[in-house]
Image (cartoon, rainbow, N blue to C red; front, side, top):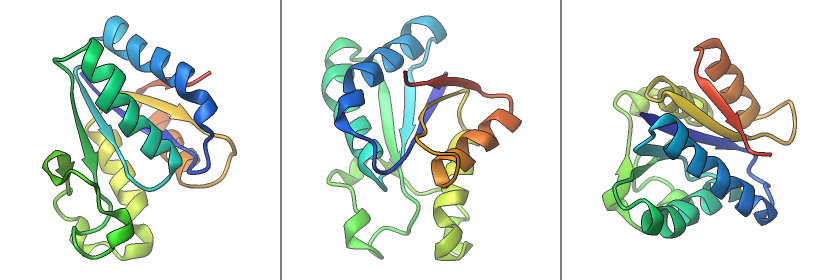
Length: 144
């Protein structure tokens, strides 16, 4: 099973223990063995750290990828440190930049069975992504 993440870009690091528990639940209860995460805000950053440290150590069979919203090389502030784990969805190069994150999030949802989320307000990209996932009948695991 594949799981993706959506969270508000200003998410506090205080959610790390709950994030760890939710990822563990996705693996042990749902059989998740692959994760997709973005690279736009603090939520994505702490999720990448969690997957690369704790999850990799406890569950070495887990695979994860950073899914880019922008063509590599076009925006240095969104370039991941390790390009070997990145995916750039086909067709996204034709999407206007202002819609790239939305379309990337839809792609992640379409290629996932489960969504782990931490949404702090009812507006914005993370809220829209979770709403889209609900319409697609994905399993939603909110971080609590």
